[in-house]
Length: 381
Image 1: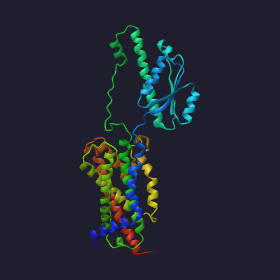
Image 2: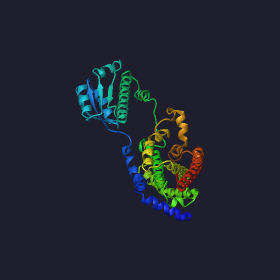
Image 3: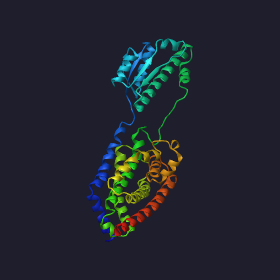
Image 4: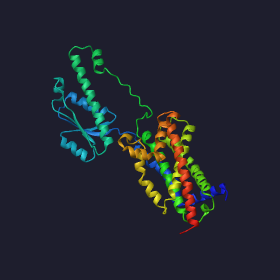
């Protein structure tokens, strides 16, 4: 059996295995919809609140209007008491409340200061943060309005008073994530993790179902089998990578900075290292269902140690160091730096070389492991 015949046999073995087909083709398509789904609305806006206005003055109504004008808040109603507001929140009709105290306007005009109270359902921290951010912004606007009235009452020039109240103008321009949404932030890393995990599962199921049995994999040299298997999986995952990093990025409006050549060059050692690791680890499994169970369990830890959803500084250093042998860890951060943050090729070169080093180690381990498996079948105990 020559190399091309071996590749054809590998393709047939993959396509004939329902578990692999479902995991690779079905899983990649399914996860391309499932994971971005919670983030499609990008950021929470128009969060519904109720207002408890004990002052009922022109200034308290101004605060309410400012809150309602905020993109993050929608004022549903004015209620008479905090108990009624609590009932709205308990019934799920509102997510937060704003309490304006009695004598709010009078105290502000006398320069005594006043306290606005607000709260929200902290069970959903994104909703809660949106409500707090919107109400803080409304409170600041009201404070500036009172300062303006005070300055004008003391005879200040209107233009000078306006400059005094708004002495600093902030021009905030977000870089790399113009929409400030969660999809461009989370999806690129998640897609690389999905490619990593499904590739490990696919090679794991294929190997675990073959080792210990007679077949074409016993009739070729270990190095030939590893190279043929890697070649077949690389062709499949070249399509998957193009789908994720091309069509899906375009569909989900993910910012793309690097060129196609740079992305392809970075993906190559990542897929080779992951495929080699999967082939090696497959030699450790005796049952076909174990790779899926194990790799699904370790998905979340890999996500955290990769460093884009949780600060690396808050993860124990030994764990961070040990995670560097997982191809997904340097690949995710390297690709984010290259393709989303606009880092130059020299900046990601250490991670690229690290992936090639992992490939060299894992492919050697895979060849040795398969040689032992072939020897075990030839000389059963």
